[in-house]
Image 1 (tube, rainbow, N blue to C red):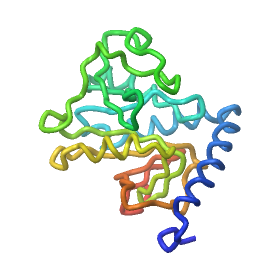
Image 2: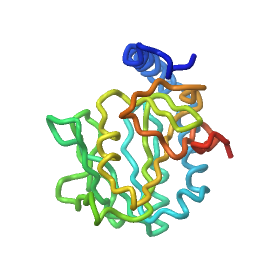
Image 3: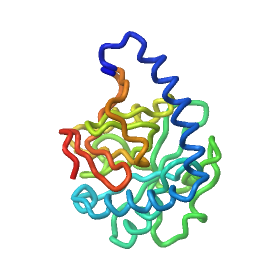
Image 4: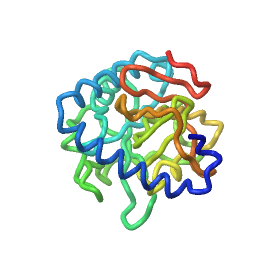
Length: 213
């Protein structure tokens, strides 16, 4: 289906979100989620996207989401800056905070708005604007991805808003992460939906020019 020709993109998104959330719940209860998470982390850590990054914007996963904790651990060992998001209560906005590589994660995080672990407010917030880190890579979770960089999120717009505020000259690279079944031939998008630079689903990395490596 060519979603770009549809007059019902919002309705299609709602149906897909319901379907993928159900599939994620089932998949996370099986034995393959951990193995696929490690596969995605391994592909990312071996990529130029990671090697060239000064800072890695990771996330603390929901129970049904792909787990990127291995990336956080390796990035600390490699001396990179690591940040995770914290939702601003009562809004559809979030901020990222730098983690301290010398401390265990449980000492720096607390349950947040959706009971996902979030950085404590005592940590340093990543500034937007001219002091945003150069050559950062942002791992972007989602429900559905296409090889050409389209993404279906959960509908709140947290990442779209945050990414829109990053100065273009900072050259932040956006990398979607998902399980193999979260890769689709096409994804319904609206004008405000930001296309990703690359996507890793399962054990394969795709760039927005649509060639997998």
